Image (tube, rainbow, N blue to C red; front, side, top):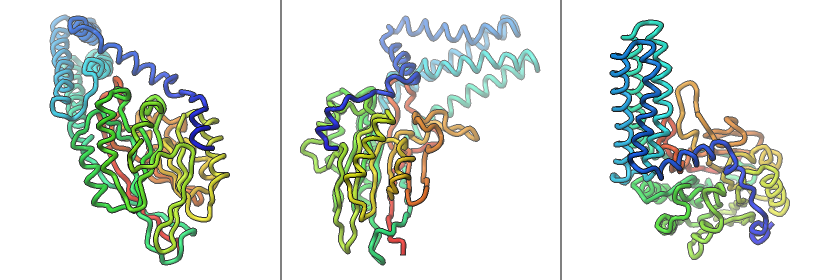
Length: 401
């Protein structure tokens, strides 16, 4: 199936129809509120958090809780306003404030039960501790962890490489989600040069959902991509359709030394008899469509050398196992982006749930690596990472013998 056939097919926008996406869009609409109306909404949430305390502990305690709750929510807003000024992230501050205020409101309202059951002092103390912990976590997740970019190295083996051949060094990059270029993207380029890979693979989501039609973002994505190079080339696929709008993002690759693979394969002839077959697919998240495309692509491509599948999401792993694909690199999940101790990721945005969230998975001859990616979700999603720092992956593919 070639690129023209893919472009002729209707893209079934599964993600845009999801409840999570619709909720993010609804919160994003709050960005259009005038400042006065926004302030009234915040005060309304503070009142909602406070009312149960009035009935459980009286007026004086309710006033104290009201004041504390208002201060914490104002603190969130001030921190969000600081992020673009420090060139860290560029999300809508009003929408994010309300998103963060929602769990704050529920937590404070619910903790009045502690005060009612064990005493007002315990309830108020636990409320302060909870809200303060949330602020510390938010500061870490927005100012620190998104910029703790790491390089994960892994070794896999293939019986399709010549014995005693040197490893093929494959650098995988995914989920850039560029709003504006920051020091994080500069670090990506630094690591890409230092690792000296044979080939670079990129698996989509180049822009942020809030900026996917923004000309300045598009120009900066091209600026970033133009600085990537490897001896045997740079190869890429598109990400989720609502993010990497094909009509907007695909043209960004025109004139760049990067091969955008949209339902195609290519064979790389490296030195010392090494070969690598790359399979690249657009991702729709509509499983029947993506599965059919992969089946067609595998039928067309040779398998005399190791095959590496570039696809944005881990959702095709069952088929990759069936077809004996040697390496499958993807992102999309961000490792959850926000992970809680013991609980793990809150969300993965994958139709396979938590089955393939992050890291290396091996089934038969198939090695899947799900990267946590580089950037952050858009729209009203808070621009935070927690226990899921960004990463790039350097894969060493070695002969089995």
